[in-house]
Image (cartoon, rainbow, N blue to C red; front, side, top):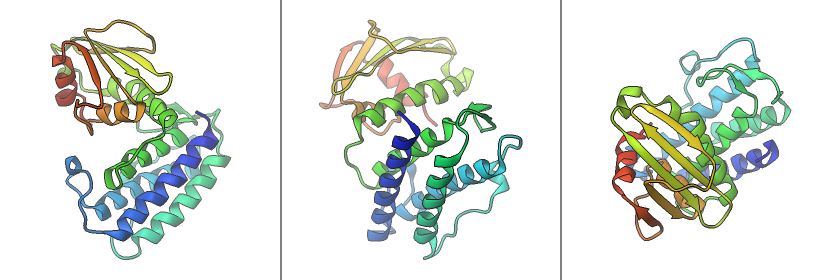
Length: 237
C-alpha cells in the first residue's frame, strides 16, 4: 500500500472517529480499552501528535511521547484533533520516506509513519464506530502487526508456546504462517499448512489479530483451536 492511500485512510477514519466522539462523547469505546469515546480520541490525538513532532524533528533526534504536552481534554479536543490530522497529512505527504528515522520501534524507513498512522486510526475508528475495514488496508495491517509488533513481545511471555497458525483472508490475497517456538516468532507470507488455520475476511482477521474479534461464525477454523486461544491471551499490547 502506498503513502497516498495510507493518508487517504488516515483522513477518512479520523473524520469518522471524531464524528462518533462528537455524537456521544461519554459513550464507551470498545470494551477492552476501558475508555469512553473522548478518552480514545485523546489517545489517538496524542499518537498523531507524536508522529507530527518526530517528522518535524527530522531524522537525527528521537522524539519520545514523554517529551510532548498531551492533547487538551476539554471541549477544544475535537477541533484540536482535526487540525492535527490536517497537519499530519501534510507532513506525511512531504516527508522523506526513503530516509531512516528514529522511532519507538528502533530505526525504521519513513514509510513506517504513514502506515502506522493509518493503521492506528483505522482500528481506533472501529473501536468507536464498528464497521467494515477496507480489505487491502486490513491485509497491510496484519502484515504490520506480524512484522513490527509480534516480534517485540517479551520472550518470557512466549516461553513454552510452540506451534503454527495459518491466517488466510478469503476476500483478498492475504496469507501468513506464524511459527512460535518457545519464545521465538517467525512469520512467512505464504500458503502453508499450520497446526491451526483461521480463514475469514481480511477486516475480521485484522480485528481478531488485535484481539477485538472472537472466533465465531465469521471464521472457519481447521485444526487445533487451542493455539488461537493462546494468541488471545499472549499476543496482547
